[in-house]
Length: 129
Image (cartoon, rainbow, N blue to C red; front, top):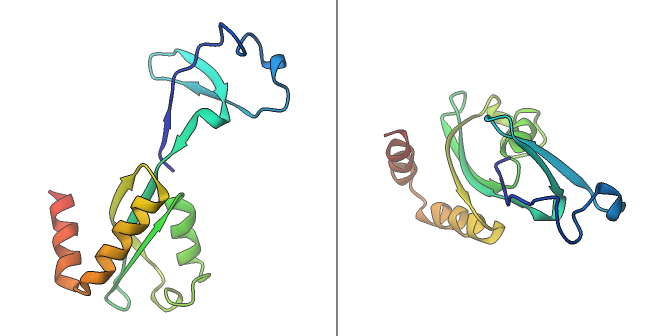
């Protein structure tokens, strides 16, 4: 899952201490430079992803969108999806992140509406460079 965060200083109104809001869930971040901060979980913005997975076993692509790509891929590879069960193992060959779930879903629907393996392979090639 890709997470964007908004830096929040604990100084100031409402962020003086963790005890100020005991019912809120807090998340701690540490950056490469060694600096860290704590902020309420509602300030975290999760990115949604449109993805394409591929099965060499059945030579097939599958297009989807999700909030958590790692978990979704695990579910595909554990056979929890009827359509993808026959193609295990699946690998991610394309992924594009969007700020909202509806944008990711719209992108998924657009790719599916093309009904074209060639279009999917062009997307993959374009992303691969």
